[in-house]
Length: 133
Image: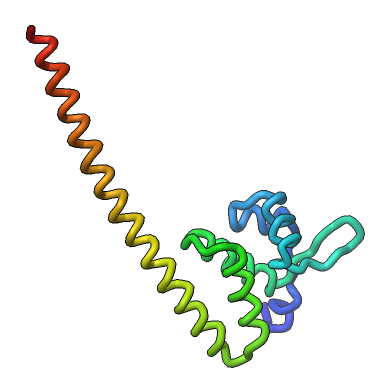
């Protein structure tokens, strides 16, 4: 394919849903939130390469735990700054903050797992003692 045909390529709801394993409802939701801007052809929506790339970024941001507001802000910065300096700077800030939060959650989860394991061991010991009585 040449560059012109790649740029002009459009995708249907079905195609994007299959490619990204999302539901049509999810695409409508992201559109309603102003994150995707499909063209309308009657009742049909056609997504361009830009929408496809934005969807990939939305899903990546969600996987990392970014809020939709943060994702929207980062996408808007991409559109506003051709150099991407603003977007990359803000992405680093949001990502650093999220990474700190994830590490805190991991630490809390590690403690909870250890405590639960101790409780299971204690209950198991108590049960064994009751069975041998």
